[in-house]
Amino acid sequence: MYQLLPCRDRVPLDTPLELHPLPNSITWAGAIAYLDRDGVLNKGSPNYINSPSEVITLPKAGTCVAELRRSGMRVAVVTNQSPIGRGLWDSENLANIHDKLQAALLLEDSDALIDLFLHSPYPPYNDAWARKPRPGMLEAARQLIDYADSEEDWSDFELKFGRKWTHRPSEERSVMVGDRMSDMEAARAFNVRGLLCPADLGLSGVIDQILETN
Image (tube, rainbow, N blue to C red):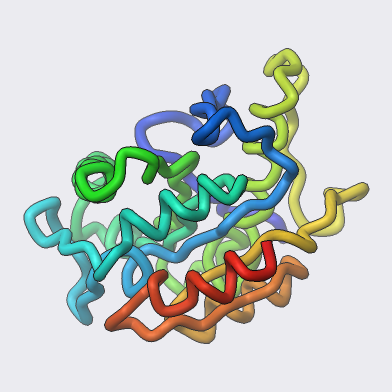
């Protein structure tokens, strides 16, 4: 059942992850902001975001990502990207799109680093564990970020999914932000608080709710 797993840009999923320090030498306490991409950080399109030139960040997206990190949260983007599986374009194009998005966020605020980009390249009919509303991307993000923070030897790292992953850490201070019900369903499946944001405002529409409880 736990097949068709999430993907990372340009590297295998279990490649060692290097985390940048949080601003102001904050010690990470375990909270993660899991963010959908389109309608949360950048403007979405019914025809997909097909090239870096189409990336338009939403109001204050960079500032909001930076505020999350300044509050002590790690930030992971978890995005369904079926154009790859449909053969419309390849994973390198997606990586270039994410490069453009990251650069635009940093241009707005130098603390607006994304700790991890994960995507599901599979169309809905593949019934992939990685594709929201299933929680595969959130499961992978938690394990990758936790392990990177632990500084343990990556040769011992093993990703687990679904019922195979026991002894899960608390997501009490974490949050999943998205503009669609599939994002909220993924949050429920992962047992993390979900916040539905307006697609025209994105993350800035719910940032106060996150920070006041973090």
